[in-house]
Length: 224
Ligand code: HQG
Image (cartoon, rainbow, N blue to C red; front, side, top):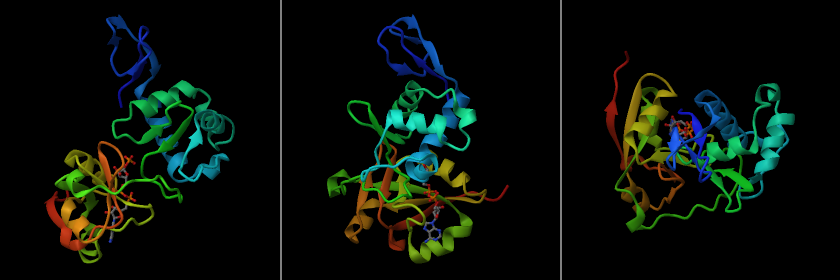
């Protein structure tokens, strides 16, 4: 990930070295940005209790509380003493997949998707006119037979994760193994069969379930 800077004129976070015609100041280098983003994702999606955090019903937690938990309660806290409130805000605001949501007053934060902990994010089912025509899901060949038989299931998460961006699907697939497969999902077919689709961010969409009849295997990449 790219470094995050702050504009000395307007105060906005940016990935650019110049903003408002002036040089920006460094907030987070790319390596720290990735580390913090992964830790925030883990704590806000899966293991808040492991840092002594309790998410509210809708998945929110105080930004200050999160920073405090990372620095004083997280088991690997020694490696995160540099984390400030500003770092958490900058990571959340500039996330390329919209992984995080901040409340309007910037006091609370939650994960936009990916949860395994039982929270109610309040996703609204998309209407027929709001559906993207196709959605993608990246997986691996070893799972294909089961997927084409049973459909896409949420597995350990609350929802099935889909994306409008084929490249994002490819990146997701690579995390699971090398025999990557991209599935193309007919969104209208999913809805017609009675399963909701939700928009979690500009890039990520969710479904309760995707029936096999709505899945086409677009691309599989041979083992290399
Ligand atoms: C597979 C990333 C066998 C499914 C992404 C996947 C996403 C089945 C795995 C988010 C199956 C679950 C989540 C079935 C589904 N039989 N295997 N019937 N149904 N599967 O990690 O979608 O970068 O829980 O194909 O963008 O890979 O972290 O889900 O391989 O939004 O922000 O079961 O993670 O976001 O794996 O990834 P996961 P995912 P971030």
